[in-house]
Length: 68
Image (cartoon, rainbow, N blue to C red; front, side, top):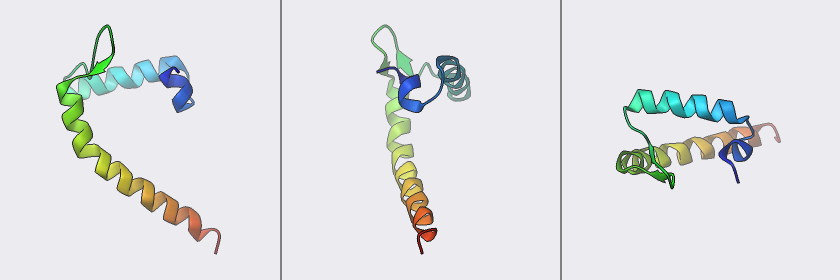
């Protein structure tokens, strides 16, 4: 499945965002032609995934506030 479909956006939006991230982090992020994450991408994921998980849990808690 294409990334754009998974994210619910159009392909140009994914391409533009990926280009911005590549520039910001000075890394290709994915190697071609098989689109494997770079070493830097793996290291970034190790740092960012716990923070993203924490944020997702906080969002779920906020959603439940509306149910009370």
